[in-house]
Every structure is written in C-alpha cells, then in structure tokens.
Image (cartoon, rainbow, N blue to C red):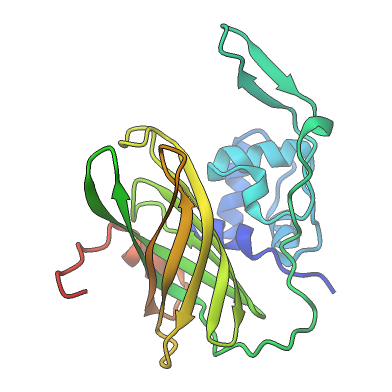
Length: 255
C-alpha cells in the first residue's frame, strides 16, 4: 500500500492551489505532460520519484528544493554552484550525499496518536540575535497534515517573509522532529537557510504543543529556544487558508 506524500500536498495547499492549479503551473513552467492525474498520483504516493523535467518544474513553481517535497529517493539533477572565482562548479548526481530519507511512516506503530492534528496552527518561536543584541519572535500560520503518527507542517506563503517546514512524529503526548526555515533575500539574514531539531509536548486539550528547538546560529554556534504550535482551525479548505494567509498579530505581553 502506498504512503501518501503529505509534504507535497501541504506545500500545494499552502500555495492555495488545487491539483488542477498545480498541474497548470507546472505546464507553464516547462513540463507539458503535467496533469491533475499526475499530481494525484504524486500525492497518493503511487509515484515516489518524479521525472527530472517534472522535478525542475516542481522546484520552480513551489520555490522549494525537490528534497523538501516529500519524494522518497534523490532525483538525478545536477547541482550548479558558484566557485568563487567567476566560474561555476557542476556536481553530478553521483557526487551528492545520499541522505534523503523516505517520508513514509511505519505501517504499524505502538505509539498512541492523540486525536487528529490536521488543520491551521500558529507557529511561534523565540530566538536571540547576537548581531542585533536582542530577542525576537518568529511567527507563521502553518498547514498541518496528519497521516498516522506523522505530521507534515508547512507555512502559508504570506504569513511571513520566510518559509517554514517542519516534519514531526507523534508518540503519545510527545512530538519530535526536524525544522527548516528559508529566510528572505531581503531580510537581515539575506536568504540564509537554518535548520535543526524540535521536541514538543502536547497539552491535554490537544490544542497546543509547547517545547524547544535546537539549531545553529549565524556565528555557527548551537542555540536553543522555546517553540509553540497553537491550534487555530480544523479546516484546511482553500477559503480557510486564504483567511489565514496573512501575518499573525504581534504576541501580547502575557503570551
């Protein structure tokens, strides 16, 4: 039985696109064979690795690397990087580290999943900027999709100038996983990408998860801080996502 590709679905929903919309955008991006049926097969997990032409179009349309879109195996695409001397280096697919893990959840688990966490949540974390010598709060409205004990979390595009991705596993009242944030090129962090680990505890109502993140800073030191996911709405309809597709209000002093 195929495991659904929750990451791709969450990214599509976060872009407020239907499956038809995504297929149309992929065709416009240079993948003439892309169809709604193909998108359905990707999201159902029937196709675990897209063709290179489709992979390039997916990256262009979503703005995310193919590795972040929930596909199980590396896609054989050459990667090009500036060599710092006015030229560019091209690495073959064989040279890429094979560290991309399947997104599939185990078919059976002894973990007891507490309810269904799918819906719109507010993500809020705190961090200290050594360069600016002050504390900041990062906020995003996010789409959470649950498949078994796996949670896929993706930010809505206009809720922040950065893009947030979180992949979690629920084990009773404990939620553990990884996070990644791509900052805006126009922000203080100039398009840098940060990532790390996260562990949260689910409160008895199932409407809040609180815990801590760990990750590296701009000076390449290891930092940590509080992180909360706060439930907003159980619906993931396009209308609901549109209503949350805006920056969250500033937190009050008692939160």
